[in-house]
Image (cartoon, rainbow, N blue to C red; front, side, top):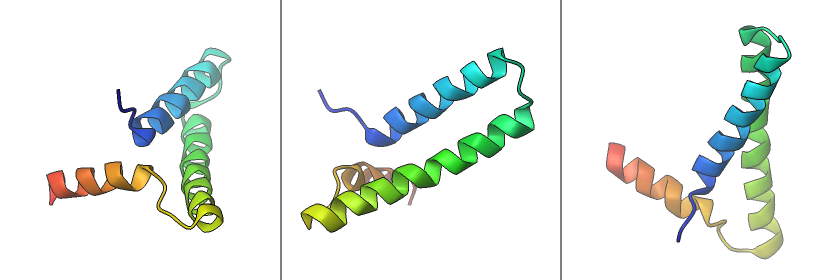
Length: 70
């Protein structure tokens, strides 16, 4: 079974947002936090590529999504 890393990222950030909402943080604050987490994943995927010299598996999923919309 393949697990799309972009979907796992979305799930993790959505789960965090629900937890933050449950403790009473505003939607604006939650959006700011979520907006800061997306680039962290991108940096880590790029760092993986720098260390290992190969594309991170997320790139295949990103290419598939781009082909479906383009």
